[in-house]
Length: 387
Ligand code: GLT
Ligand code: MN
Ligand code: MN
Image (cartoon, protein in one colour):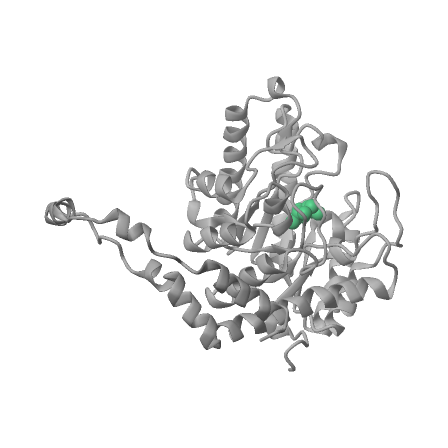
């Protein structure tokens, strides 16, 4: 395998809805024909992709009979077996049908909330049947534009109730499925519940089975509100909660752009890839991105290849950075290794007394320069191919 050639060992995966995206936006209809899911699997398999992810409705039309469903699953399974691809993640569409316009798990209508839970149980069963180990929860309609209409504490309680119930379902069935919550600040709702990775991490600790639930951070979603995706993912890893990831690219302050991975902010993408590669994260490298609306035919597969090539190129740069002696010296000058040293260790009365008795010299400490500009410039030059 050459450095930039995708290989199943890289664990790249794509949602059926990504390469299958038809290019519609709020101002114009589709610009591309629909692609058959089995065909998507074959095309991706030929590009060296390892897995696909899917919503229940991406594969099975919501009005399919049981026998139609089974025939679709059998045909899809055959495409997976022929290509050696896996289903790396499954999820449920709780955002398209008008029934969910006021929310799914947080709809004001109890019957809608029950429908959402029932639909999710079926989606979990589908995921298990196809071998998915992760079930993603993106609360597309969980939010509101009208603060008066939906008290947020009630909404969070209903969200928790749904997730606790669904964890109970997975345990009762003896499935190994783990859940990954995907935060998003807004779009399509004015304000969405669990808007960032930080909100989701805190919420998970309030669940009945927090060990079954982690996060699925998406680059575009954290970036929309100007947060560092690199930092969000690091915090999730540090908490043992990075169960899955949605890779794409985004400019700050825009609508959810879902651009090809690497298309924006290469510096952030570079540190993200280094983090994923060096942290021991062994989950899917999953792309939730879309070809530009102007793409057709071959352009869609060029888009997919581009996501993977950028990832591999950045992984290569990350390993070069670790061996670059000038960069290592600049890291020393910045004091970076010092951050890995414990500060005071665990509390003891003696340690507190020692610290209180220490004479610090803040003025001397304030005289240190950290040479961050030089370090940063070296990294820029590494990314520009100058080193
Ligand atoms: C939708 C959304 C994505 C989610 C998908 C999973 S669906 O395309 O924009 O961010 O990850 O539900
Ligand atoms: Mn996503
Ligand atoms: Mn997105």
